[in-house]
Length: 158
Image 1 (cartoon, helix red, strand yellow):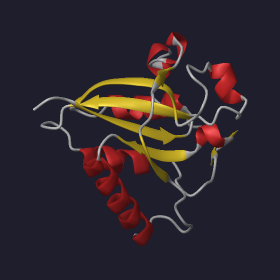
Image 2: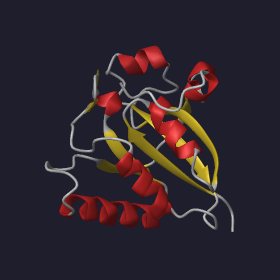
Image 3: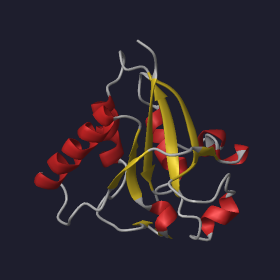
Image 4: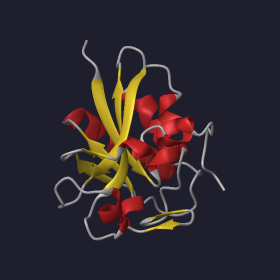
């Protein structure tokens, strides 16, 4: 069975990437941008909040070793999906919560997972996570890749 891809937006991509890299079965990760109109945007352009892109983590995984559902569970655990266009001190649509699905199965699993999370008592407010088809993935600049790992950090929580 070939490897699959999953793409998640959950705020600043540095900490999100670090969380996904720790999961057995994740083959590789890359941070970048998805969901906007600008072709091949730079970090500086995305930070203007005018490109429409979200900061995302693009995950390659072995579905025999880790399921898409397990990746969704990690996604829900690493951010607050009830804040619109914001994660902690980071504000703007580039920090929105979104699942970018690569096929209909992922779309259906993401929608079911979102419903389960909303119905649980975990979140007191409505989940605002978008579930959108994956578009072009634009890899972020090299200095953003594995940013925390390169600095000996495991998270960027304040």
